Image 1: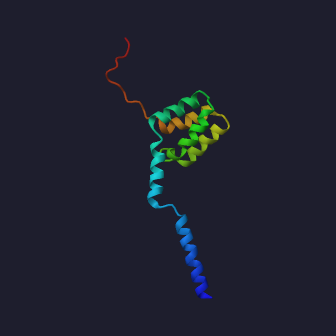
Image 2 (image 1 turned 30 degrees about the vertical axis):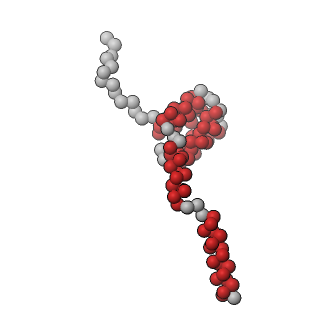
Image 3 (image 1 turned 45 degrees about the vertical axis):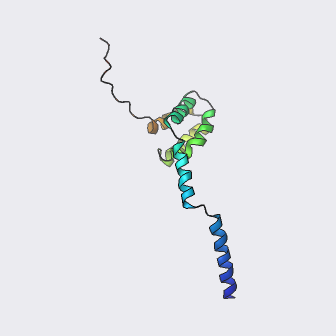
Length: 113
């Protein structure tokens, strides 16, 4: 009986091992997601949301895995919720809190007299 259990367990372990994604592949997938969130992609997402364009939902879905490196999960869930109920203003406000860097002061620009 013990030999049958050992044999069955070993077979099950082999099946599980063939189903597990190699660690290197998981890292490559994560890196792909991070690479797809460029400044240009974020600018496009902000523009679509600002224009109340429903295409923002699709783009957000594509970028969400990479956004996890920039934005806390709870905030991402809130942004997603606001998009799903078409509250684009709140979605944009939350997104901009994490994706817009403060614009540096430009000392070369003179104020009007």
